[in-house]
Length: 441
Image (cartoon, rainbow, N blue to C red; front, side, top):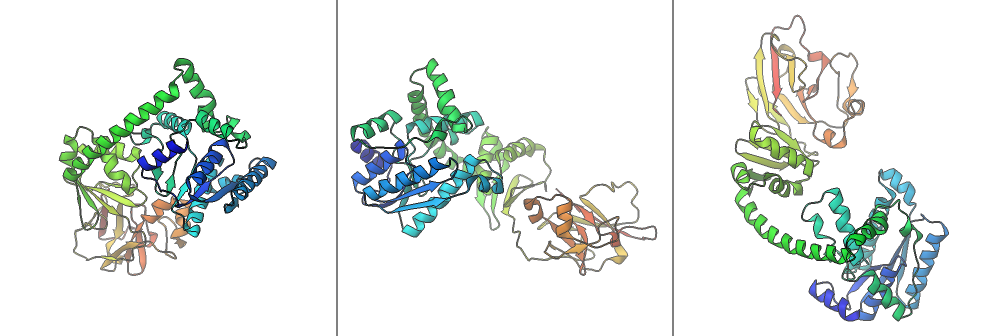
């Protein structure tokens, strides 16, 4: 085992002894074996444990076991205790997900405070196979199917090569004790269903199912390396960097014959989801210039034969002016302005248009992000309302609120762009000229 882990560490360019590592130890067979191997190789280990308080006395038993193990090796011991059920409810995630996030958040804090080089976790070959199947069922791409990495940032997995049987033989041969987590047998956890039900079923078809999956992962990792080389070449032909973001050349994108995949690779770093990029890839050919798509952080705008991607600066204090005779504004939004004498033939329910009484407007108009404390009189109402309250009533999401622009006449908000005008500036029976504003989406 010492020879194998030494070779694996060298082949995957992991930290070498006597590097200082945060060793994540639950008390189970895998983490105990990992700690013992790292200790025997001469690493400077700091033992870290999380008590998630999910199993009553068992959770406390685990903490005591790991503490005693660290003391027997004269190693520093740190432990964090979490009310995991409460935190999961507050964050709106599963208990499984909350525990995972809390674990890695704590380990990273400890790594920084202890000035450690990396965090060692005890994933092994069985975890690799389970992860592959879970991602396959959920619908992962090539990268997702390449399995757990030996290193991901500050997280290292020095035991990823070992099977559970090898780990247990090592512990038995060296008389090393470990504890069993009863939650590993509970089918309520997704991973356990794959471990106890799916993989055993596959092994009735192919007794070497795990080994076959691991071999497939290895081949996919090689394929990923080739894929990365090809994608870098395509990216250099399609994407160029601009002062405000990036520009994607659409004709060359179409020539790849893999528009969805390439577009997802290009846009996912800017926060666009797979569903968004799939929808965008289908619609691009027929989409008019000016059409916009938003992620939480970026905006993608079609501009003739290019897709322009730029960050959304939700904290921007920049103000854009619109003069009386100005017919259009291209940045930060695509707006057109026109004076008309009648509303006949216009769609008055289109939220991307605003019809305002021209004589009530004070030029130049101004366009800016909404700000805390802003208020207006919503169309059809008489009382003033804070925009923050209006957004709550309209169930605006946080990303949607960050994208809101307002059009002002003097100090008055006359239009929440793309939503609602101010009632004081509405068109009435005595309106002589209508100021017509159109937002191109």
